[in-house]
Length: 184
Ligand SMILES: [Zn+2]
Image (cartoon, rainbow, N blue to C red):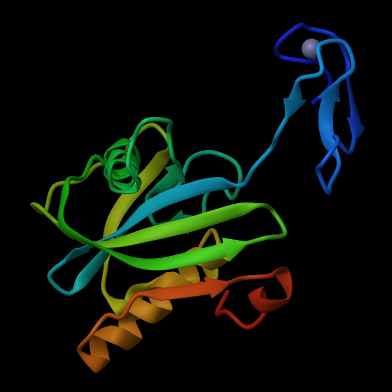
């Protein structure tokens, strides 16, 4: 951030009174511009024994496969956002959603939340951010070509939980050093 969104003057980095960390502060109008983590919401859509993946048309990780997910918008719930992203990226509708995985990514100040969901019908298509959308059996998952560690981790939990017969909610912190232990 370089300029104050309240008055247009340049901002500076300093610790405001009674605060404990540096913020962008406007020396002209004294506005403190707080920056907080972003929330990414998405779905793990399931149809019979297959899961729905999207091939990304856009950076980052264009060409790699992902679960439909994206940044939460203001004034929506996490579930609204997960459904919206599933529609935007995969032109698919879901039902029976249950919050399934939550990942803290402190190194990039993001929180990911995935809902496990049933596809309402076996209808899907590539939205503008995808080049391809498809249902995958476990043995056909393109593990080497998954876009993000949160996707690998969610799919690994899902297939293990399916074998065990129940799907407990999972909350994990993923740091860069954990990524090598995932399958991609
Ligand atoms: Zn200002």
